Length: 353
Image 1 (cartoon, rainbow, N blue to C red):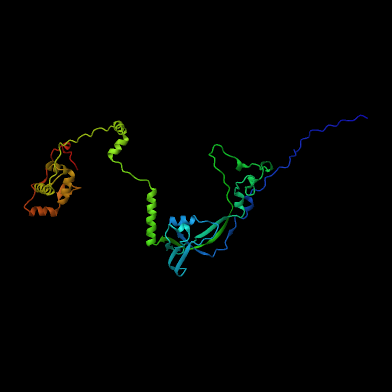
Image 2: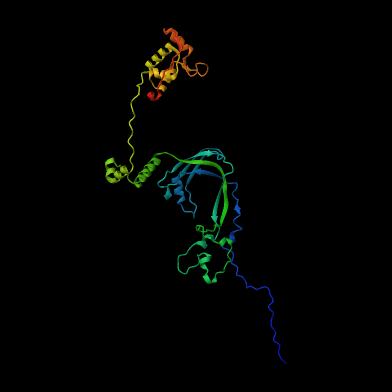
């Protein structure tokens, strides 16, 4: 019996893919649920918030963080809610307290600051140990997970949109957020300002600090004109030849009038108003040949005012009190009301104001 060859029809179907190797959860994902928890166990604790001098802060910042260190003694006089005085005395046995003052006065700046709290943060347990590098060949106990696992045994992680790099932008190093444990230290009861006590020890320390700072500064030497010219050499000549300023034109001394004394000016003005009752400023300038501003100052002194309306607008006349004084001194009544207009060449009276 002949065998019949059967052929499989190419029916479109669904392509079966192999198992996709998914990446293991990141090292930081383990602590994601713990980062939102804040420790409020010390919510009722009251604390002081003080502003410290820079040298005191540096001395405390250099201390080790792995153990609790008692830096000094805080003395409170009066009630803790409303202290009469606060003082701080540092322990001299601490090495970082050698070259700083030991006694401070805490000045209260704000007794009850509203909504002011102090928080602390620390790394979650086990995070630091996974980031430390051992430094010994073949020792992978303290290496990060990405370094401790061999290249061939690492599981591939599918790329996402976050892994794409824009080559047109400047490269920025991506740093993962360090998981922290946040705790409330306390509520600020009082804000303070820490000031050193200016005693004999404080003065000696400041003298030593100033002497040390002056040693660090480079010496300053003064350079005279002769030394400067010697150092510059021919550069000064080049600069002077490069920029040439036009010579200053001497001002003409023609048509310049010397100011007369103030008392002489007042006498001449009184004589003018004895002759005429109204004077224009340009006529007085032509008669007296004095600067215009100087004549105005004299008119103010003798109480002569400028008329702003009427047929005599633009002229100066004495006040009634000045006219009475002028008549009592034998001035009499002016011959005419207004002085005749005179031809004045304004270019011939370019005088200083």
